[in-house]
Image (cartoon, rainbow, N blue to C red):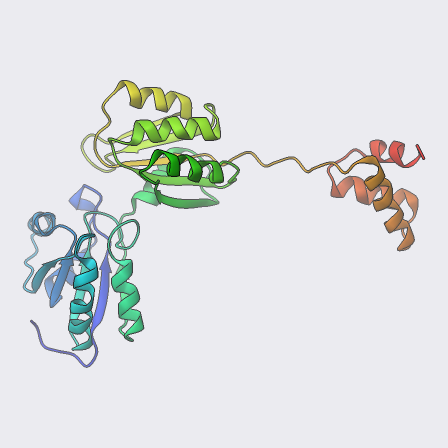
Length: 283
């Protein structure tokens, strides 16, 4: 290991999704100076280092879903001793549906500084390429593997008005798209993004029903990100006639003229003023 500092530091490295040219200069600098590099796949890390022409002098350890519970306290000990630890996954930012959250939380709890060398993200890349609204979105990660649990999750999300971003494994994407079409409607706009930044990158922008049929008829491969348009905003509910009359009466009692009270109620509930006027004067 390199020279020990007074306090260690954890650096999260945003790794390329596929094209090594997307790696930042800072990522290479951290790999070349870290005392320990924790990698989701040490072979992929070695290949990335070769592509970047970077020598990693520090100790390389594996850190993946199967061993992160055991390895996290070991890495916290290294950090507590004052060393620099870099965390890198197969692509994108650690912790985002990848190993990392457990180590970040443990490091913070131990008072260790945590920072990042930002890099590519499949979430925002797919969102930008989808052609769907990007101003408001939510990331749902991987859907449940069990069909029953997956359908229940999708029913709960069916009314979500923000654009949804999901990850899915190739062998489950056909079933997931079928369930999405059933829960959200076959005409809901969506995009299937496959092998982002790689040689065979593909973005299919179609309604969910069409994507479900495409996946069922084909053999989707590679890393897949799904982007689904949010549900249309629900129209405001119309109060019944008695409620409309009561709302107008409340405003009149508060000092508004009947004309202004009717206008206020119509505006608040997306109604035509004439319709509210007719209801009020039917008494």
